Length: 450
Image (cartoon, rainbow, N blue to C red; front, side):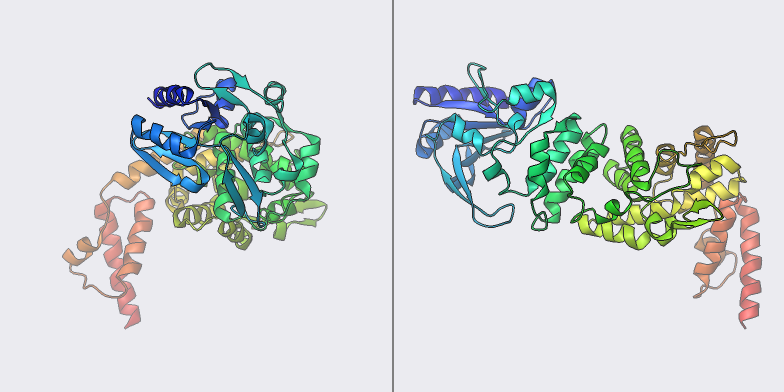
């Protein structure tokens, strides 16, 4: 429907002496064969007043910044803009002086965009591609290249955008663009804008590692991802990690984790788990008796994880999930190797914010081990134990009302007794037997406390 509406607007604009183009990501993605429902059009050659009159004939106009020449139509997924000139007035992402200029011409209108692949324009009525800066060539060659070095550096968000485009499309960033990005200060960006680009990289890229490798090449990890930078060159035991340092391992894990995004409870927080799971090695790595160890890194590194996540988001559900799952991240593969009793795996899954996610993370983090004593985990074992845990949790269990009905007076110690009942539940003890055990325990504890 929105394309039909764009064509209607274009017909009216043509009658008024102007021209309408699809612009930005829509043109890029169409040429790449990627579906993109975010439709952006740019209207050239008529005044803002004339455009508004056309929009009134087409539907119900909505102005999201009339002075900026930005409009929409109620009920339509269509962004409508006029060409404009922009001049930086500060160091922030929004610090720009904007002037609408419908007669600026396609070349100057495209010049204000970030990368050549985003500067192509497509005539809505004829399909003609207007490409002043070689975007089609760069698209074919898989290159992210800036347009204008003077205007590019005015918006620091473009550093992150370049990295996430490289990750999403598995493109390389042109050397001169990497060099240009090295000198841009990212400290003025809001975390909301940084997280927006991070999300796109983590959720849309087949290899999210390209985002971080690109930032590394630009020397742009310092401000927003300093903990990750500290993993570069941080050695690991080559027996368990022949791939190399903690950085390399983390990059491999997030790429493998990307394959499980459609299986987990919420993909973004799962990817953040993959990204932060080994930050604790920064403070725990040491060499003992000729071997490299990072004992208790999953617990001792939590202040680093909390700082990293807190820098990027205030979302409580994300924090709760990551802070819960990081300390547990090693347990599934250990369990898959040692095959412990059912009670042990029940406790592991019960402690997890998302038990099944823990298994898929274990797959992403599965160690690659040389030699015959292969510590490679066992997904089938873990999935079977998860099924057992879920079946266990569906069975009747001891609740507070059961204790009261059995004659136990409520008190401050009830929470302790219910916790004991929960342990019995995880051990697979049937409700009737568990109730007797809890009552015996409760009466014994109350007698001791007297």
